[in-house]
Image (tube, rainbow, N blue to C red):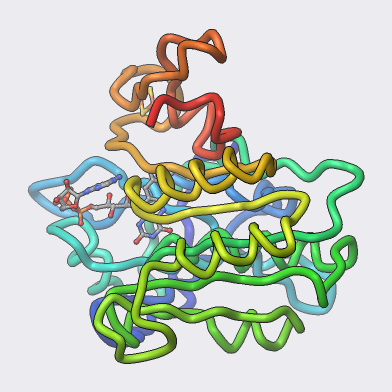
Amino acid sequence: MSNELARVQWNRPLGAGYHHLCLSTSEAYAGARPGQFVMLEVAQGPAPLLRRPFSIHRRLAEGGAHRGIEILFKVVGDGTARLARRDVGDRLALLGPLGRGFVWRDGYRRVYLAAGGIGVAPLVFLLEDILPQIDREASAVFLGGRGQQDLLCREEFTRMGVAVHLTTDDGSCGQQCFLTDPLEAACATKPPDVIFACGPMEMLRCVAGIAARHKVSCQVSIEARMACGLGACLGCAVEGAAEAGDKYLHVCMDGPVFEAHRLRF
Ligand SMILES: Cc1cc2nc3c(=O)[nH]c(=O)nc-3n(C[C@H](O)[C@H](O)[C@H](O)COP(=O)(O)OP(=O)(O)OC[C@H]3O[C@@H](n4cnc5c(N)ncnc54)[C@H](O)[C@@H]3O)c2cc1C
Ligand code: FES
């Protein structure tokens, strides 16, 4: 883990409040795993805010050498609005890589990814990482959002050669439904070996239910408000499933990726 000043290489608006940020970092991030996150300073100045947690969207390498990490974020409040204004060359305090990422197990071949809105951020990194091991023809991505503007990274997934199912709440792109509808249908006809999911809690609850009904392994990446990201403040506790034996789990240390059956949704 490293605590360093990272330099902004680019910070590009993608429309609808989404931004693609690239930070040059030390080699400490060369071994970052999909699903891990960082605590990032969003602004300097007289009213400093706590660092905010963001998933690692990708690692940036050039000519085989590690250069930095990419982050995909959505402006939802003061901190992310300030981050959206950071410019090329700015230096931001960065702590990471943090937490436990997605776990890959021998025998996984058919993989379904379920990405709701900005939950897509860690799943691009994941698919790039596991691509050599999966059966691309039998794997799929289920991408959902409120509207067309919320369906990010479609081209990246398509380029990787897996089927992409698009759903929107307003019907502006793909099927007008929640992504859990085509996911459930696909699990009923061709159950995968594992589902990896990231998105709003309500979506993850539904994905976990689908996985349980179809007896499929499922890992979910969840969010919680975080002050430290390191297990010190205990502010990120969530309830564990009684049958799994954990009363509370801490998202920053035990997660953010969990086997779905360990959580009490
Ligand atoms: C492990 C982890 C990974 C994350 N990865 C990403 C990512 O890749 N891209 C991205 O855009 N965001 C990500 N987030 C969420 C991001 O941290 C918050 O959007 C950010 O902290 C909001 O800061 P703010 O000051 O702009 O908003 P605030 O002013 O703090 O809050 C604005 C609104 O957002 C809600 N909110 C704030 N933080 C969270 C949170 N952590 N979970 C749920 N609701 C929240 C608040 O309840 C409020 O309604 C991640 C969170 C966690 C815990
Ligand atoms: S954020 Fe402080 S313990 Fe998890």
